[in-house]
Image (cartoon, rainbow, N blue to C red; front, top):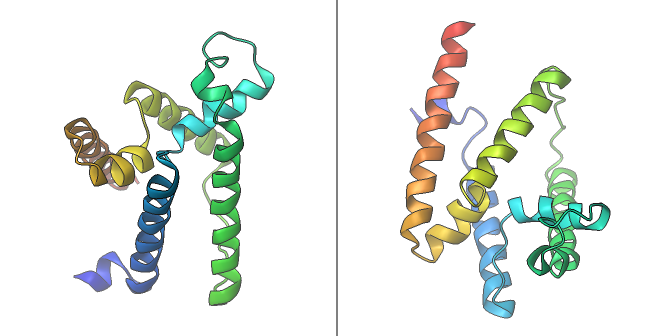
Length: 153
């Protein structure tokens, strides 16, 4: 069954998960900061928007370390790709579909007061009941959506 779910093996997924968990744990233990990604979006918008929502101190005051965190994620993925020697496969999903999916995911992250990384990695690690509920909804929605898309093809 694992071969069906992970045709390229489970090692890279397990390694990635362990590294992400270690990274957010290190961030929290050393600084007390929670490394979710949905707040990064709002923090970046605080550079260009003067809207009251984006001007909040929690966004404007955290944008430097959040940008460093995002850069580390991108650089870490690039280093892993180079070190592993695996080719990057371009997506075949049309750009308009990716934009719509991104907008839906972003809206959902705002509605859930956090994203999958914030709730799934940081929130569950700190035993927050609201994060457990959010992750359950995320997973149920993802499973239903994947099955619906597969059935429609």
